[in-house]
Image (cartoon, rainbow, N blue to C red; front, side, top):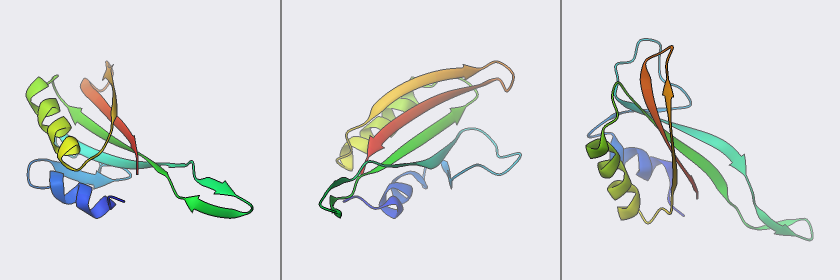
Amino acid sequence: MIMLFDISQAFVQKYRYFYGHAPLGAQLPYIVATDNGSNNFNADGKVYEPMQALNLNFYATTKSETDEADIEATLDSLGICWEKEEAFDENGSFYLTIYSFWR
């Protein structure tokens, strides 16, 4: 199982990286990792395969296909199978790319 520390180390050299939330006033771009609960495989009162849902939220001032390709290549190199969705916050004027995966 890939550890959250390994994921953070893969990104910390290129992007500001936070867990849970970014501090107020953090400069874009940055990545925030969030835990979205679990979906463990269990039977007979025992967990046989723990599964933790994670999101990597990439915040940027503009859409950057270069940064997204870099993040996707890094996730691929870690053996992480990911899903992606995008949003634009008109109030905050930032682009958000969300990478979801299980570990």
